[in-house]
Each structure stands twice: as structure tokens, then as C-alpha cells.
Length: 348
Image 1 (tube, rainbow, N blue to C red):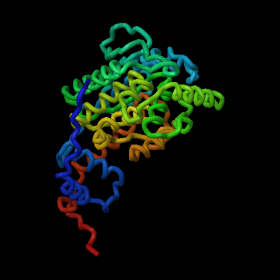
Image 2: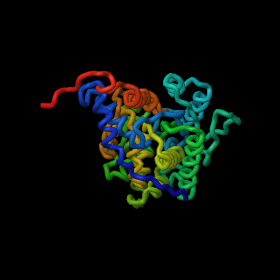
Image 3: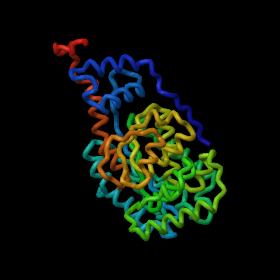
């Protein structure tokens, strides 16, 4: 089982960073959220001059047995089809990653398809999708731990190659159902309040999804204080790998860009294991998925964007990355009042 040592942020440079931010040629607080991001990144990297290196988007893909029970309007085969689309460069995350200069890594965590060998695909397959948690646990505890370890290994490889910014995305038909159940158990929120339309369910489909997940929740005796058991019961291989990848990225003091509802559910599990992971996270956006705002509230998160996204794939994280760049660039390159010869506001 992977062990992680995640240190809370060292605040020794806090006052120096605040002083540097406040003495840029602008009114106090005039750059809004960019100022808090600059402070956070400076504390993560323990420097007054942070840098962003080889930003990388990790898209973890996996299939879910619960999809076979009709919780999604799309068939399970779409997961594999979308992975092939990622590899061909045709998905939204390909477009946005190219646009903002992020490397893209596509990881087969457990897709129900045998892919041809492809240098563009990280083969981390744990199985041909999870079991249907309507009837049994999605995965064994052993497989859950193995997936967490594999996700950690993937991130450590990227960081060793020079990456210090990691975005988290996913693909998996049925994974909003997993995320809803994880949220419900780990936050104590009734399952009906955690269920959304996913990939576009109509009212009847949403009612059926809620019924099925309510039934699934009743099938299992869960220790809500044991995140590993909760994850093994309701999670997906891609979600478990994200948990490990998030924890490893925080341990290595990287910046974590958290995408939407499913990525936030993975972070919920990670934060229950190691609460300090949250200090390394920048929340990209508020998803249009029904329960994401409540989950963000639970995590104490204030996302950068709110533009109606509900695609997944890491798209929101990619779109938010230029804001992180702007925060670092103003901290490093914007003149101070003293260097520019600009008068500061007079003391009142």
C-alpha cells in the first residue's frame, strides 16, 4: 500500500510574499483572485519567484459496471471511443491543452477495451472495467490500493521529468454515479442531493439514476470513516488512480489543478486520507453538474471559473491554467511602486 508524506504549507515566506504582492503598481487587492493564487504558488514552491514548468494534463480513463444498469444515456463503449479520440487529437481536452501549452497524457486505468500498443497511451489497466456496485463492490481493496499506487507512480514519473503543475481529468461512462456515491457516503449528504444529469439525462433518466443509486447504497454496509473501503465499494479505477496521483503530486509539492465533479470526488477521498493535500490544489471551475457546488463547499473551495462546463476530460483545468500563469507572471514581472517610481497611496 502506498504511503504518502504530505506536509502542510510552510508559511515562513507568507509575509514576504504578501509584501511583494501589495507593493506592485496597483491598488491593494486590485488583481483579486490572482493575488491569492500568487501567494499560494509562492508558498507551495517556497520562493518569491515561482516558476511553472512542463504543465501536464493527466486524463485517466476507466469503465464502470454500474453503466450497464442504465445510469447513463450513452453506452459503455463510448469510453473506449473517446480514448481513441484523445489519441487522435480530436477531443476538447486536446484542443485546450494545445492552446494553453499543456502536455497531455492519456491513461488507460481500466477501460473495457483492448487497445493496440500506442506510445501516446499510458497502459495502467487494472481490469476491463469495475464490477457493478449495484450488486457487489466495484473493486477489491487490494485492487483499490494497487490503483492508488499506480496513479502515484505516473505522477512521480512526470515530476521527475520536470513537471510541477498537474491537471486532473477523466473519462468513464458512469463515473458521475461513482462520484455521487462517494460524495454521499463521505460527506453524509443524502444520495438524492448528490445525483445529477451526467452526460445529459432527461427527467425520467435522472429519476431512474437516482433510484438505482439509492438501491446501490442500500446494498452495502459501509464504514464511512474508512475512505479506502468507500472507494473500493463505489469508485472506479480511474478515480482511484486520480487519488494516488493527487497525493503523490502534493507530496512532491506540485500545483494541482482540479477539474470538475469527478476530479473533485477523487480529491474528496484523497483529502480524507491526507487533509493537507487541499493546500496544494487550485480549483479550476464550478461544474454544471448538480452536486458540484455542494462538494466544493464541503472542500472549502472557491473555483476560478463558472462558465457552465460539464464535459470532464480536464477541460476546465486546462482553461483555468492561463490564470495561474497570469498570477505567477505578475508576481515575477510586474513593477513595484519603488522600481517604477510610482507614488503609493498616502497613509490615512
